[in-house]
Length: 363
Ligand SMILES: NC(=O)NCCC(=O)O
Image (cartoon, rainbow, N blue to C red; front, side, top):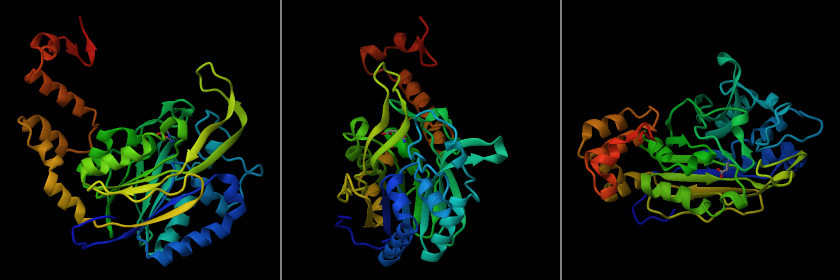
């Protein structure tokens, strides 16, 4: 990363962006061997795969499931069986066990997005990233907390908003968090991971060109600046074909794909610098060396987060921010309270704000 500040800690990170199932079927074990070899050569400490749903890559490597080979990666079309049968335990599922071995063998922290089935709680499904330490133990998991209901992304068909809050994992190489895919559109989401102490926030994504490519270079980069942390935006490449046509629920024609997944994975730093993006069309590994001291150094310079804690009504604001695992929608409540306390324009007059109750106009 570009930085004028002397480097003290520099854990190389690797982002893995890859294509769709057909490619992986051909590559299978060779791909896995190749990738892990490259990782070892770079001395990498973190590995994060792209997309919420690239777990079939690892499953595919482990067991030749599904004779048709048609397991979708994005999984948003509302079809259920047989896809839900790919769900697995975050703690000891096949993918997790596979990644544990990799992590230990290569002394590398692994961020592993899977479709989770929580058998302890009624067999519920979640979109989950498992974090595995470089010793091979499962450090924990982070469930996707904003679920898209937009265009062809109908993920609430399978699972709801996650209930794990904004966990941060202390690894040997730094404190990390995982803001899964759609969560990157929500500035307060990044903020919560950062306030909980994350120095690097991974954003494993599966997103398509027309929908989000204009936002892609901005969101994770801006989050790095606003929160004095590193962010890793990871997307996949290619077009996924579904045998059964589906509609977008907008009166348009039925179609067989979600659009083009445009890759372009990158790492952004707290000082606003960023790496070049990986290819729009090819698989890729991005190795970035990051200086974690930059988080504190840039934070001390700009103090964006400090100003949150120093607002005039600390009882209302700071207390909330210090109990950071609560639902952060409460932040809005606090903002509304502030608005009530100090009207700043004719539209925020006492009269008007009194009519606002629970987000609804009462008269
Ligand atoms: N997988 C997913 O959440 N995609 C939604 C599209 C986007 O966030 O750009």
